[in-house]
Length: 175
Image 1 (cartoon, helix red, strand yellow):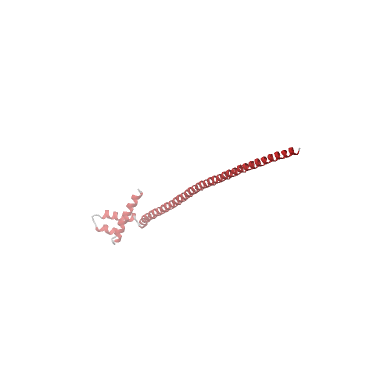
Image 2 (image 1 turned 30 degrees about the vertical axis):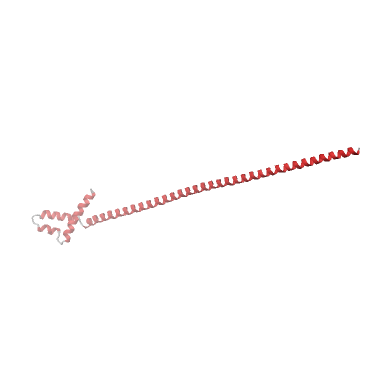
């Protein structure tokens, strides 16, 4: 309703301005047409009275104000949208970077742990194999040494028995 009134007033102001611009006074324009003197006079006077210069300036300033306020609102909404988009993009990028870093670290840790476990297993296997080989070797040597010692003992026992027999025989001959 307010807009309709504003449009009506703007229309009246335009008519009066057009008449003034052509150099014809609204009153003179009305008196030339004698048949419509009264109606034109009142029609021409009323818009000129109603839409006096402060009112027309008021109307134009209100339209300018609405224009500037809409442009300001548009600008501020644009600014807010830009800011919001920038913020959300920054947030998304930060989140993505954090996620990928976490994932990469997890993957790297898993890989290195697996590698370390593999290496430990390998080393343990190698060491066990080496130790088993060494034990086998030393056991074999010990057995060989024992056999040798037994042989030597047998030999010396045999010799001792022989010597004892000889000594007994020599004693018997003496008697």
